[in-house]
Length: 159
Image: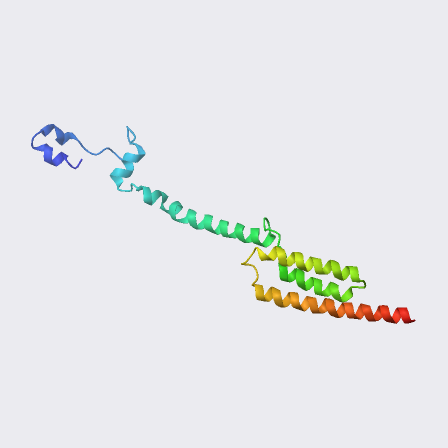
């Protein structure tokens, strides 16, 4: 339709070309795409799907955030918390205070040695000075407990 005016001088037959009737009750109905073109209401790809393109990632991101929060809240798939060497050593301090025999003290000393041996390979977990302080404290507790047990044994043998 735009080129018709330029070609009208060369070909007078083009003067008979006109835009089709856009009425709904026309003898020959016009195609809906051609109707949108002639009326100037034709939408581009972004006009038609732009809202979906912009809103879909926001909605999906919100859903993913909600699912991640629910996953974290429910604790699904979280690894078991491994007790560190300090926790094990502090638990031994409580056991030392309740020991009633020399053999139990010996087994606790072996456990301390095993914990310190296992921790020696993992340098990133706890620094050596902290482990040494805790081990020294436990050795003092064991020594004090042995003295208490020896005193009890002496009192029991006298009585």
